[in-house]
Image (tube, rainbow, N blue to C red):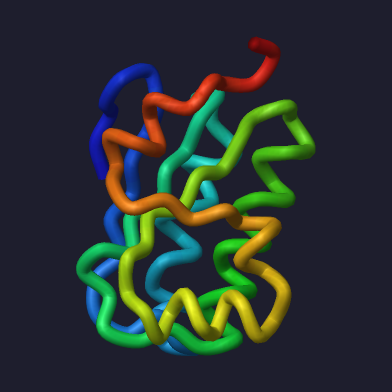
Amino acid sequence: MYESGGGVVVELRGEVDLVGFQQAAPVLDPVTAGSAETVVIDLTHTTFIDCSGLALLMRARRRLASRGAELRVVCRDPMALRVMGITGLRVILAPVASVREALEQPGPGT
């Protein structure tokens, strides 16, 4: 986790499944409850994502939205993008190809 360009970037690595959810939630919860207006979850280094991983992303999105902040997702993996598409979450999460692209998007209230 690091701060960059006015946002907080959280890199998830490896498999984002039920075990990954259980490991990532304690890291993400303080970030999503914090003061950052933009949180980027970077999935560049993930090797697998399932419904638990998608639930983690949606949980972060809901928590941020409840305080007027925004979630941005970075993902280039074709299989992860396919899973997001099949579930209808690709439109909601609107993944982009790089952290830079995520941070350059207009922020909340602009």
